[in-house]
Length: 148
Image (cartoon, rainbow, N blue to C red; front, side):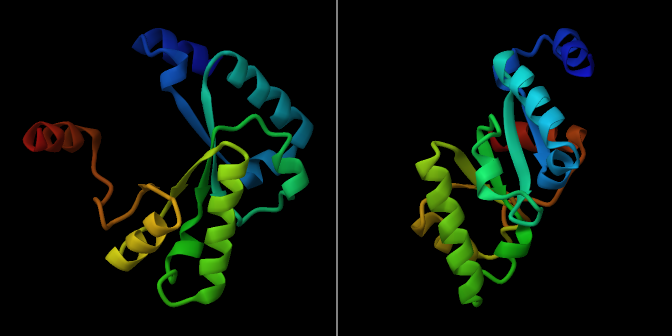
């Protein structure tokens, strides 16, 4: 399949590959999704659910998924420093991931206040314009060399 081919062509070890899927993708065919995720997990591939909290999955279904990480959707982060409802939801997601032994990453972090809030609640992995805008892989390699 495509993943085996990619691993073979790149020489990447399966445990160094993380596949991101959205809640919506899973909910289209839950049983088939679980089957596919279990197969990937058995082979050592890590799995992250992207846009967590925006889809239709229930917490009951979440426990069936063999995942490693939840990604908090940017819609909960964008007004985090001023919206108490978003604060409560983000705190609950962070707590949930801890209790389920999952890692958590917040998307859409653009302000220092958001970063501070997330760190104070135990979320240490973040993505967003505060850290970098999306850049082509060629530029990434160059910027990595410059920062080393």
